[in-house]
Image (cartoon, rainbow, N blue to C red; front, side, top):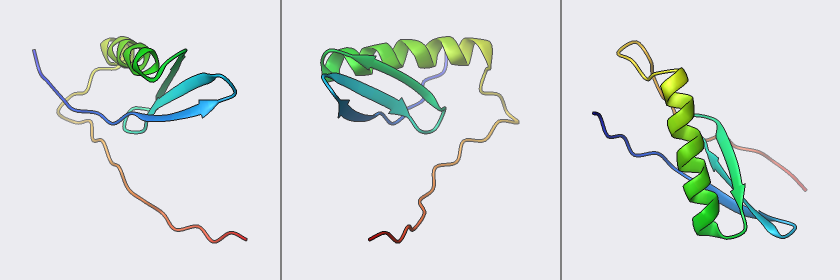
Length: 69
């Protein structure tokens, strides 16, 4: 079994915490930060079961610049 670290970006939307894994694109939610991240972990595990990360897969995380008023 392989282990990989992923990021979780969490924000509050109304009264629900929304968690996003930017490397995979999975999203989940919960009533607390901990619940949102636990649900995101489960969603990401299920996603990877369906779409395995193989030798030919690459995960890229980058940044971009945005100008706004």
